[in-house]
Length: 431
Image (cartoon, rainbow, N blue to C red; front, side, top):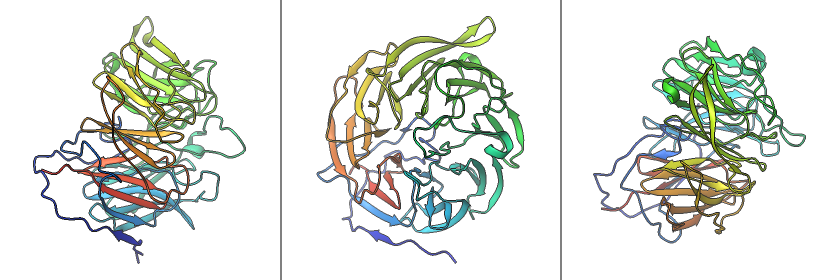
Protein backbone atom coordinates (compact mmCIF):
# COMPACT_ATOMS: atom_id res chain seq x y z
CA UNK A 1 0.00 0.00 0.00
CA UNK A 2 1.34 3.43 -0.95
CA UNK A 3 1.20 5.99 1.77
CA UNK A 4 0.52 9.42 0.37
CA UNK A 5 2.64 12.35 1.55
CA UNK A 6 1.02 15.28 3.25
CA UNK A 7 0.27 18.00 0.74
CA UNK A 8 -0.70 21.62 1.07
CA UNK A 9 -2.61 23.22 -1.77
CA UNK A 10 -2.42 26.99 -1.98
CA UNK A 11 -5.59 28.59 -3.38
CA UNK A 12 -4.91 30.92 -6.28
CA UNK A 13 -7.32 33.05 -8.26
CA UNK A 14 -8.24 31.94 -11.75
CA UNK A 15 -6.24 33.69 -14.45
CA UNK A 16 -6.62 33.31 -18.22
CA UNK A 17 -3.17 32.15 -19.24
CA UNK A 18 -1.78 32.65 -22.70
CA UNK A 19 -2.36 29.65 -24.94
CA UNK A 20 0.64 30.45 -27.14
CA UNK A 21 3.26 29.88 -24.44
CA UNK A 22 5.70 27.11 -25.32
CA UNK A 23 5.96 24.37 -22.67
CA UNK A 24 8.44 21.53 -22.35
CA UNK A 25 9.39 18.63 -20.09
CA UNK A 26 12.68 18.48 -18.15
CA UNK A 27 13.52 14.75 -18.32
CA UNK A 28 17.01 14.68 -16.81
CA UNK A 29 19.76 16.50 -14.94
CA UNK A 30 20.02 20.11 -16.16
CA UNK A 31 17.17 19.73 -18.61
CA UNK A 32 16.60 18.33 -22.11
CA UNK A 33 20.13 19.13 -23.34
CA UNK A 34 21.94 18.98 -19.98
CA UNK A 35 22.81 22.66 -20.25
CA UNK A 36 20.53 24.11 -17.56
CA UNK A 37 18.31 25.67 -20.23
CA UNK A 38 14.58 25.44 -20.87
CA UNK A 39 13.12 26.32 -24.28
CA UNK A 40 9.88 27.55 -22.71
CA UNK A 41 8.44 30.97 -23.48
CA UNK A 42 5.52 32.93 -22.12
CA UNK A 43 6.99 33.03 -18.61
CA UNK A 44 6.93 35.82 -16.04
CA UNK A 45 9.52 38.47 -16.80
CA UNK A 46 9.09 40.10 -13.39
CA UNK A 47 8.24 38.45 -10.09
CA UNK A 48 5.74 40.13 -7.78
CA UNK A 49 6.78 40.92 -4.23
CA UNK A 50 7.11 37.62 -2.40
CA UNK A 51 7.73 35.69 -5.61
CA UNK A 52 5.48 33.91 -8.11
CA UNK A 53 2.32 32.17 -6.88
CA UNK A 54 2.81 28.84 -5.13
CA UNK A 55 0.63 26.29 -6.97
CA UNK A 56 1.21 23.42 -4.54
CA UNK A 57 3.72 21.78 -2.24
CA UNK A 58 4.29 18.23 -1.09
CA UNK A 59 6.27 16.59 1.71
CA UNK A 60 7.74 13.17 2.27
CA UNK A 61 10.66 13.12 -0.20
CA UNK A 62 13.33 12.51 2.42
CA UNK A 63 16.81 13.93 2.83
CA UNK A 64 19.09 14.85 -0.02
CA UNK A 65 20.16 17.31 -2.68
CA UNK A 66 18.68 15.53 -5.72
CA UNK A 67 16.87 17.71 -8.21
CA UNK A 68 13.76 16.55 -10.06
CA UNK A 69 12.98 15.33 -13.57
CA UNK A 70 9.62 16.07 -15.19
CA UNK A 71 8.42 13.84 -18.02
CA UNK A 72 5.11 12.52 -19.34
CA UNK A 73 3.06 13.79 -16.43
CA UNK A 74 5.41 12.53 -13.71
CA UNK A 75 7.96 14.08 -11.40
CA UNK A 76 10.90 11.83 -10.51
CA UNK A 77 13.40 12.39 -7.73
CA UNK A 78 15.40 10.62 -4.99
CA UNK A 79 15.54 10.91 -1.24
CA UNK A 80 16.75 9.18 1.93
CA UNK A 81 13.91 8.03 4.16
CA UNK A 82 14.26 6.40 7.58
CA UNK A 83 14.97 2.91 6.18
CA UNK A 84 17.03 3.71 3.07
CA UNK A 85 17.42 5.58 -0.19
CA UNK A 86 14.45 5.74 -2.57
CA UNK A 87 13.43 6.81 -6.04
CA UNK A 88 10.04 8.52 -5.86
CA UNK A 89 7.49 9.28 -8.58
CA UNK A 90 4.85 11.99 -8.14
CA UNK A 91 1.99 13.27 -10.24
CA UNK A 92 3.00 16.39 -12.14
CA UNK A 93 -0.40 17.92 -11.42
CA UNK A 94 -0.52 18.25 -7.63
CA UNK A 95 2.44 16.20 -6.43
CA UNK A 96 0.61 13.10 -5.15
CA UNK A 97 2.88 10.09 -4.64
CA UNK A 98 2.54 7.45 -7.38
CA UNK A 99 5.19 5.00 -6.19
CA UNK A 100 8.49 4.77 -4.34
CA UNK A 101 11.22 2.15 -4.72
CA UNK A 102 14.06 1.49 -2.32
CA UNK A 103 17.37 1.51 -4.18
CA UNK A 104 20.02 1.52 -1.45
CA UNK A 105 21.04 2.25 2.09
CA UNK A 106 20.38 5.74 3.33
CA UNK A 107 22.93 8.27 4.53
CA UNK A 108 20.57 10.91 5.85
CA UNK A 109 22.42 11.08 9.16
CA UNK A 110 25.78 11.86 7.52
CA UNK A 111 27.03 15.40 7.37
CA UNK A 112 25.30 16.82 4.26
CA UNK A 113 23.85 13.35 3.76
CA UNK A 114 21.08 12.13 1.51
CA UNK A 115 20.59 11.48 -2.18
CA UNK A 116 22.57 13.27 -4.90
CA UNK A 117 21.62 12.03 -8.39
CA UNK A 118 18.68 13.13 -10.54
CA UNK A 119 16.87 10.33 -12.43
CA UNK A 120 17.13 10.30 -16.23
CA UNK A 121 13.83 9.45 -17.94
CA UNK A 122 14.02 7.72 -21.32
CA UNK A 123 10.76 6.35 -22.67
CA UNK A 124 9.42 3.62 -20.39
CA UNK A 125 12.48 3.60 -18.12
CA UNK A 126 14.42 5.76 -15.76
CA UNK A 127 18.09 5.45 -14.88
CA UNK A 128 19.82 6.70 -11.78
CA UNK A 129 22.80 6.40 -9.45
CA UNK A 130 22.54 5.73 -5.73
CA UNK A 131 25.13 7.26 -3.43
CA UNK A 132 26.91 3.92 -2.94
CA UNK A 133 27.75 3.73 -6.64
CA UNK A 134 25.02 1.46 -8.01
CA UNK A 135 23.55 2.31 -11.42
CA UNK A 136 19.91 1.24 -11.72
CA UNK A 137 17.20 0.96 -14.33
CA UNK A 138 13.56 1.15 -13.16
CA UNK A 139 10.24 0.86 -14.93
CA UNK A 140 8.89 4.41 -14.98
CA UNK A 141 5.26 3.31 -14.73
CA UNK A 142 5.57 1.03 -11.70
CA UNK A 143 9.00 1.73 -10.17
CA UNK A 144 9.99 -1.93 -10.54
CA UNK A 145 13.76 -2.47 -10.64
CA UNK A 146 14.89 -3.92 -13.99
CA UNK A 147 18.66 -4.12 -13.57
CA UNK A 148 21.49 -2.89 -11.36
CA UNK A 149 25.26 -2.63 -11.75
CA UNK A 150 27.79 -1.67 -9.08
CA UNK A 151 30.49 0.73 -10.23
CA UNK A 152 32.47 -0.15 -7.11
CA UNK A 153 32.26 -3.96 -7.21
CA UNK A 154 32.16 -4.41 -10.99
CA UNK A 155 34.67 -1.76 -12.00
CA UNK A 156 36.66 -0.75 -8.94
CA UNK A 157 35.10 2.70 -9.16
CA UNK A 158 35.93 5.40 -6.67
CA UNK A 159 35.64 9.12 -6.14
CA UNK A 160 38.46 11.61 -6.11
CA UNK A 161 39.73 12.81 -2.75
CA UNK A 162 37.18 14.47 -0.52
CA UNK A 163 38.06 16.91 2.24
CA UNK A 164 37.63 15.77 5.85
CA UNK A 165 36.71 12.45 7.38
CA UNK A 166 33.34 12.06 5.65
CA UNK A 167 32.60 11.03 2.08
CA UNK A 168 30.51 13.06 -0.34
CA UNK A 169 29.51 9.87 -2.16
CA UNK A 170 28.54 9.27 -5.79
CA UNK A 171 26.64 12.19 -7.30
CA UNK A 172 26.49 11.50 -11.04
CA UNK A 173 23.25 11.50 -13.03
CA UNK A 174 23.44 8.91 -15.84
CA UNK A 175 23.55 10.02 -19.47
CA UNK A 176 21.35 8.03 -21.87
CA UNK A 177 22.34 8.13 -25.53
CA UNK A 178 20.39 5.66 -27.66
CA UNK A 179 21.08 2.19 -26.26
CA UNK A 180 24.00 3.41 -24.13
CA UNK A 181 23.71 4.38 -20.47
CA UNK A 182 26.94 6.27 -19.76
CA UNK A 183 28.47 6.62 -16.28
CA UNK A 184 31.89 7.29 -14.78
CA UNK A 185 33.42 4.74 -12.34
CA UNK A 186 36.71 6.68 -12.35
CA UNK A 187 39.10 3.68 -12.29
CA UNK A 188 42.04 3.90 -14.70
CA UNK A 189 40.87 0.69 -16.38
CA UNK A 190 37.24 1.80 -16.42
CA UNK A 191 37.32 5.57 -16.45
CA UNK A 192 33.92 5.63 -18.14
CA UNK A 193 31.57 2.78 -19.06
CA UNK A 194 28.58 2.35 -21.34
CA UNK A 195 25.89 -0.12 -20.30
CA UNK A 196 23.10 -1.52 -22.43
CA UNK A 197 19.88 0.36 -21.78
CA UNK A 198 17.74 -2.79 -21.76
CA UNK A 199 19.97 -5.29 -19.95
CA UNK A 200 22.67 -3.39 -18.07
CA UNK A 201 25.36 -5.42 -19.86
CA UNK A 202 28.64 -3.70 -20.63
CA UNK A 203 28.97 -2.25 -24.13
CA UNK A 204 32.44 -0.78 -23.58
CA UNK A 205 34.72 0.63 -20.92
CA UNK A 206 37.33 3.35 -21.25
CA UNK A 207 40.97 2.52 -20.66
CA UNK A 208 42.44 5.54 -18.93
CA UNK A 209 45.97 6.83 -18.75
CA UNK A 210 47.93 9.34 -16.73
CA UNK A 211 45.97 12.53 -17.23
CA UNK A 212 48.36 15.01 -15.65
CA UNK A 213 49.71 16.12 -12.30
CA UNK A 214 46.86 18.45 -11.33
CA UNK A 215 43.83 17.16 -9.42
CA UNK A 216 43.31 13.65 -8.03
CA UNK A 217 42.58 10.24 -9.53
CA UNK A 218 39.01 8.96 -9.58
CA UNK A 219 35.59 10.17 -10.68
CA UNK A 220 34.45 13.69 -9.97
CA UNK A 221 30.98 14.84 -8.93
CA UNK A 222 29.94 15.93 -12.41
CA UNK A 223 27.74 14.37 -15.11
CA UNK A 224 28.63 13.76 -18.76
CA UNK A 225 27.32 15.67 -21.79
CA UNK A 226 27.32 14.92 -25.54
CA UNK A 227 29.58 16.74 -28.00
CA UNK A 228 30.28 16.48 -31.73
CA UNK A 229 33.64 18.25 -31.47
CA UNK A 230 36.02 17.44 -34.30
CA UNK A 231 33.20 15.65 -36.12
CA UNK A 232 33.22 12.73 -33.64
CA UNK A 233 30.31 11.98 -31.32
CA UNK A 234 31.77 11.88 -27.83
CA UNK A 235 31.00 12.19 -24.14
CA UNK A 236 32.60 15.09 -22.30
CA UNK A 237 33.06 14.76 -18.56
CA UNK A 238 34.87 16.48 -15.68
CA UNK A 239 36.75 13.84 -13.64
CA UNK A 240 39.30 14.06 -10.86
CA UNK A 241 42.08 14.96 -13.33
CA UNK A 242 40.07 17.47 -15.35
CA UNK A 243 38.16 17.38 -18.64
CA UNK A 244 38.01 14.29 -20.86
CA UNK A 245 36.40 13.33 -24.17
CA UNK A 246 35.41 9.69 -24.83
CA UNK A 247 34.33 8.35 -28.23
CA UNK A 248 30.66 7.39 -28.07
CA UNK A 249 30.90 4.37 -30.37
CA UNK A 250 33.99 2.68 -28.90
CA UNK A 251 34.73 4.16 -25.47
CA UNK A 252 38.18 5.28 -26.59
CA UNK A 253 39.70 8.14 -24.60
CA UNK A 254 40.12 10.84 -27.24
CA UNK A 255 41.60 13.77 -25.33
CA UNK A 256 42.03 15.28 -21.89
CA UNK A 257 42.77 18.67 -20.35
CA UNK A 258 44.28 18.65 -16.88
CA UNK A 259 44.63 22.27 -15.81
CA UNK A 260 41.01 22.87 -14.79
CA UNK A 261 41.02 20.38 -11.91
CA UNK A 262 41.14 20.79 -8.16
CA UNK A 263 42.58 18.08 -5.95
CA UNK A 264 39.48 17.98 -3.71
CA UNK A 265 36.25 17.98 -5.74
CA UNK A 266 35.46 18.73 -9.39
CA UNK A 267 31.73 19.33 -9.68
CA UNK A 268 30.24 21.55 -12.46
CA UNK A 269 28.90 19.88 -15.61
CA UNK A 270 30.94 21.17 -18.60
CA UNK A 271 29.52 23.39 -21.32
CA UNK A 272 29.94 22.27 -24.94
CA UNK A 273 29.48 24.36 -28.09
CA UNK A 274 30.71 23.25 -31.49
CA UNK A 275 34.38 22.32 -31.16
CA UNK A 276 34.71 24.07 -27.80
CA UNK A 277 34.41 22.92 -24.19
CA UNK A 278 34.23 25.23 -21.17
CA UNK A 279 34.99 23.81 -17.74
CA UNK A 280 35.31 25.18 -14.24
CA UNK A 281 36.20 23.99 -10.74
CA UNK A 282 36.30 25.51 -7.27
CA UNK A 283 38.82 25.40 -4.43
CA UNK A 284 40.74 28.23 -6.06
CA UNK A 285 41.12 26.43 -9.40
CA UNK A 286 39.49 28.58 -12.09
CA UNK A 287 37.92 28.11 -15.52
CA UNK A 288 39.09 27.32 -19.04
CA UNK A 289 37.94 27.17 -22.64
CA UNK A 290 39.54 24.51 -24.83
CA UNK A 291 39.17 23.85 -28.54
CA UNK A 292 39.00 20.22 -29.63
CA UNK A 293 40.92 19.81 -32.86
CA UNK A 294 42.82 17.24 -34.87
CA UNK A 295 46.47 16.76 -33.91
CA UNK A 296 49.18 14.36 -35.03
CA UNK A 297 47.78 11.54 -32.88
CA UNK A 298 44.09 12.27 -33.11
CA UNK A 299 41.91 14.77 -31.25
CA UNK A 300 43.55 17.05 -28.71
CA UNK A 301 42.41 19.85 -26.44
CA UNK A 302 44.08 23.17 -27.14
CA UNK A 303 43.69 25.83 -24.46
CA UNK A 304 42.05 29.01 -25.73
CA UNK A 305 42.23 30.78 -22.37
CA UNK A 306 42.45 30.06 -18.66
CA UNK A 307 40.86 32.23 -15.97
CA UNK A 308 42.42 32.05 -12.52
CA UNK A 309 40.24 31.25 -9.54
CA UNK A 310 40.20 34.85 -8.42
CA UNK A 311 38.62 35.82 -11.73
CA UNK A 312 36.08 33.03 -12.28
CA UNK A 313 35.61 29.72 -10.49
CA UNK A 314 32.34 27.85 -10.16
CA UNK A 315 32.47 25.75 -7.01
CA UNK A 316 29.17 24.05 -7.81
CA UNK A 317 25.80 25.14 -9.09
CA UNK A 318 26.56 25.06 -12.78
CA UNK A 319 27.10 27.20 -15.85
CA UNK A 320 24.76 28.65 -18.49
CA UNK A 321 25.79 29.51 -22.06
CA UNK A 322 23.35 31.89 -23.74
CA UNK A 323 24.02 33.78 -26.96
CA UNK A 324 27.78 33.72 -26.52
CA UNK A 325 27.85 34.63 -22.82
CA UNK A 326 28.65 32.36 -19.88
CA UNK A 327 26.59 33.08 -16.76
CA UNK A 328 27.37 31.47 -13.42
CA UNK A 329 28.10 32.05 -9.75
CA UNK A 330 31.75 32.59 -8.88
CA UNK A 331 33.84 32.13 -5.74
CA UNK A 332 34.62 29.18 -3.53
CA UNK A 333 31.55 28.54 -1.37
CA UNK A 334 30.19 31.67 -3.01
CA UNK A 335 27.76 32.22 -5.83
CA UNK A 336 28.36 35.80 -6.87
CA UNK A 337 26.61 36.26 -10.23
CA UNK A 338 29.04 36.91 -13.06
CA UNK A 339 28.97 37.07 -16.87
CA UNK A 340 31.89 36.31 -19.19
CA UNK A 341 32.34 36.26 -22.94
CA UNK A 342 32.55 32.63 -24.04
CA UNK A 343 34.95 33.29 -26.93
CA UNK A 344 37.69 35.20 -25.10
CA UNK A 345 36.90 34.98 -21.37
CA UNK A 346 36.45 38.73 -20.90
CA UNK A 347 34.39 39.50 -17.80
CA UNK A 348 31.33 41.48 -18.91
CA UNK A 349 29.84 42.19 -15.49
CA UNK A 350 30.20 41.00 -11.92
CA UNK A 351 30.93 39.49 -9.57
CA UNK A 352 27.78 40.87 -7.95
CA UNK A 353 27.26 40.88 -4.18
CA UNK A 354 23.48 40.61 -3.90
CA UNK A 355 21.47 39.53 -0.84
CA UNK A 356 22.03 35.80 -1.45
CA UNK A 357 24.50 33.91 0.71
CA UNK A 358 27.02 31.18 -0.12
CA UNK A 359 26.92 29.00 -3.26
CA UNK A 360 24.33 29.53 -5.98
CA UNK A 361 22.63 27.23 -8.50
CA UNK A 362 21.62 28.55 -11.93
CA UNK A 363 19.02 27.74 -14.62
CA UNK A 364 17.77 29.65 -17.67
CA UNK A 365 14.39 30.13 -19.38
CA UNK A 366 12.77 32.76 -21.60
CA UNK A 367 15.43 35.47 -21.32
CA UNK A 368 15.85 35.11 -17.58
CA UNK A 369 18.42 33.51 -15.26
CA UNK A 370 17.14 31.78 -12.13
CA UNK A 371 19.68 32.02 -9.30
CA UNK A 372 19.13 30.00 -6.12
CA UNK A 373 21.43 30.58 -3.16
CA UNK A 374 22.34 28.22 -0.34
CA UNK A 375 20.35 30.32 2.12
CA UNK A 376 17.18 29.71 0.07
CA UNK A 377 16.96 33.10 -1.60
CA UNK A 378 15.84 33.06 -5.26
CA UNK A 379 16.64 35.76 -7.83
CA UNK A 380 15.25 36.38 -11.32
CA UNK A 381 17.97 38.07 -13.37
CA UNK A 382 17.93 39.28 -16.97
CA UNK A 383 20.21 37.25 -19.24
CA UNK A 384 22.08 40.15 -20.82
CA UNK A 385 25.82 40.84 -21.23
CA UNK A 386 25.23 44.54 -20.61
CA UNK A 387 24.80 44.60 -16.84
CA UNK A 388 23.29 42.79 -13.85
CA UNK A 389 19.54 43.44 -13.74
CA UNK A 390 17.31 41.87 -11.09
CA UNK A 391 13.63 41.28 -11.81
CA UNK A 392 12.43 39.83 -8.52
CA UNK A 393 13.43 37.86 -5.45
CA UNK A 394 11.88 35.72 -2.71
CA UNK A 395 12.94 33.20 -0.06
CA UNK A 396 12.08 29.49 -0.23
CA UNK A 397 10.21 28.42 2.93
CA UNK A 398 11.57 26.11 5.63
CA UNK A 399 15.24 25.83 4.70
CA UNK A 400 16.78 22.94 6.66
CA UNK A 401 20.28 22.59 5.18
CA UNK A 402 22.20 24.23 2.37
CA UNK A 403 19.66 24.94 -0.39
CA UNK A 404 21.62 23.32 -3.22
CA UNK A 405 19.14 21.39 -5.39
CA UNK A 406 18.85 22.59 -8.99
CA UNK A 407 15.65 24.51 -9.74
CA UNK A 408 13.67 23.06 -12.65
CA UNK A 409 11.49 24.91 -15.18
CA UNK A 410 8.95 22.67 -16.91
CA UNK A 411 5.50 23.21 -18.44
CA UNK A 412 5.00 26.67 -17.00
CA UNK A 413 6.10 25.67 -13.50
CA UNK A 414 9.23 26.11 -11.40
CA UNK A 415 10.06 23.20 -9.10
CA UNK A 416 12.18 23.75 -6.01
CA UNK A 417 13.24 20.59 -4.18
CA UNK A 418 14.15 21.46 -0.60
CA UNK A 419 15.13 18.29 1.28
CA UNK A 420 11.83 16.62 2.35
CA UNK A 421 9.74 19.25 0.53
CA UNK A 422 8.94 20.04 -3.08
CA UNK A 423 7.53 23.48 -3.91
CA UNK A 424 5.82 24.07 -7.26
CA UNK A 425 5.45 27.69 -8.43
CA UNK A 426 3.36 28.88 -11.36
CA UNK A 427 5.62 31.10 -13.48
CA UNK A 428 3.45 31.54 -16.58
CA UNK A 429 2.83 35.12 -17.66
CA UNK A 430 -0.81 36.24 -17.81
CA UNK A 431 -2.25 36.93 -21.23
